[in-house]
Image 1 (tube, rainbow, N blue to C red):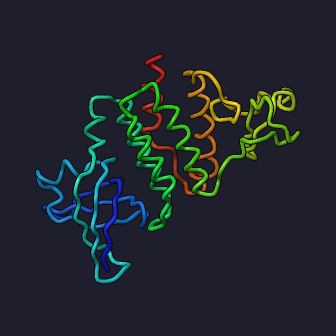
Image 2: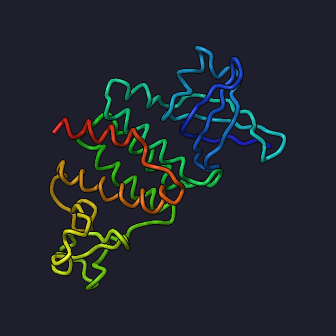
Length: 241
């Protein structure tokens, strides 16, 4: 068995004295583990960094074996983010959450979005809003997508200001007003009527929204919690306001 694909490094752990086991998220083959000979060497350590974009060739005698992987670097997103604590924490959070996807199950659309977001981690005026959308996309890929297209109560798509924390459906201003304390805020950059500049408050509301559904629908049933690095980059962003 052999395949070649591009991928993103999700995690790396030592194996023996010189090797490493790498977990890749590939475009066409999904999440895959493989053994990298010499993965702890000076030559390969810069490549085997979480978040790096690589070309990979995987080989094994049988498809269900660990297999061996050889890698070549395409773009070092980890090194590019090293001097920005918020961006580095965001990258780490993305990679941790990506591991929620089923092993060896390709998700090419989310893969493309991920590379797009990683490419903007050097611009703090852009990536936080993109990352909110990425988390929404992850929820969709996991089968827990939100319906933000119209009001759950009236069927209209005007003045959508809230989201039901139970159903994940949008609620209009008029229908939600009596229950506003129990509803989640819907930032306008996530609606079809989006316009204007995305504010820091919008981003905060967006992460509160995605964080709620990631926790309640995905992580709690698995007895897991949101990555610590997610709370870290949110803290960094709050300080930058």
